[in-house]
Length: 539
Image 1 (cartoon, helix red, strand yellow):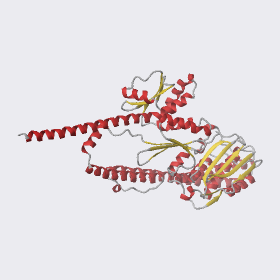
Image 2 (cartoon, rainbow, N blue to C red):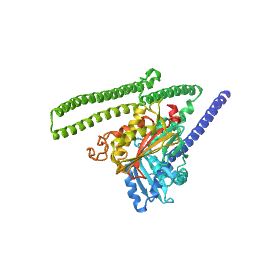
Image 3 (cartoon, rainbow, N blue to C red):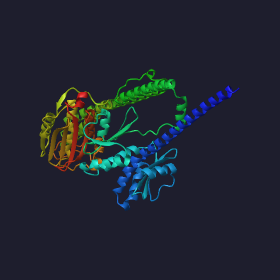
Image 4 (cartoon, one colour):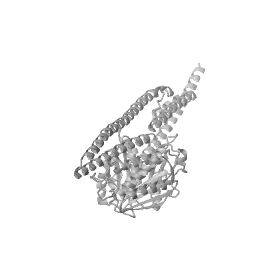
């Protein structure tokens, strides 16, 4: 009889010790989870509150309330400043705010961020922050604005200050970020923040400064760990078998996600390849099917658009040809000088419409090619030679304009010579139309990039119009009449610069518009990769 109670006691002791071990593990997991949660909240709140607080410091005390109100709508969040700690924080969040100066709270749908400022006498509150708005992108734009607020030599000091306030690793670099793809580099050059997430779920963010250097924020992990219940479940049910099954499922799902991501990337590059749902795991097959349907619909819409443009253009040209033939017949039978002048004006309008049709077709063709990613070219183009040929042609039809060409002896790019000539001709003709008497064209090479700068001493382009004029059918001036001073026939329909932007983008470059420091008019800068650069070699 004594053996049975002893056996029961032994089992009970083992059970109790097991419960103690489980309780200790659960307590450790809870403590670990609590620390990770605090760290997670601190990481979420640190960068945005630091950026906004530094920008707020740059404002006059009397203007800070107005600055906060003005930026609420831009950021899509609430901004406020309190002279006492926020009363809606719980004990843990107030403790975090007291220890680190930064805290965050979550109400089930939105986040609120807090930071002590003014030596702890006030609290900056950012409320109504959700994952559905563009708040992170706006914060990165404001970070760039704050860093660019000082000369380039002083920017690293500002970045050091921000590192200390946010706890995030940040670096300033130059050249091409090796971790980014060509598409991400293109987005970065356009001024958009670029996010990069590695296989360990560490996020890095890149923004481009106005001195062509870039800031890398990260890598940093913004995960707040697993929930307490899942942690206990993994602790109790975990084992080698479960681990192997989890790894196998994770590997298959990860492979499916990679394949879906690769197919989506091909689709965005213009590929019409249909993805087979059998290449992914079972639960991802509906996603693959919907992607195929979406790709088919988009391809059909693009194809229909191209057919419509071509058909409409053809239908326009047919009656235009008939009208021109009729005008010629009228001109042959009429001897009136007034009628002849009217016929010449009508014929000029017909030529304008014909040129418009050609511009629309060119833009549609290049825009369609651009949707397929960067072009693949094997022909080497001498930009200096192309520019000289264009200027020689314009000098024969323009009066009183001085052309100056400088540099460019080594400016060669890989590309379509006809399209590049079209782009350069449009830019130079635009300068001729708006200049007073001078057009300067400068070619140079910098960091494996060929640069073409076209400047004039005309009225220039207003600041708020510089991006808009690169869009189709956009003109700075409201008038569409052609000049009558004997200069190169201008007017147009606002398609020339749009074609330039598409052609340059197709060649992996970009176009910018500013004011000429030498002539005072407009300055157009075309950036194109050299044919001996790494980018050209990859293509």
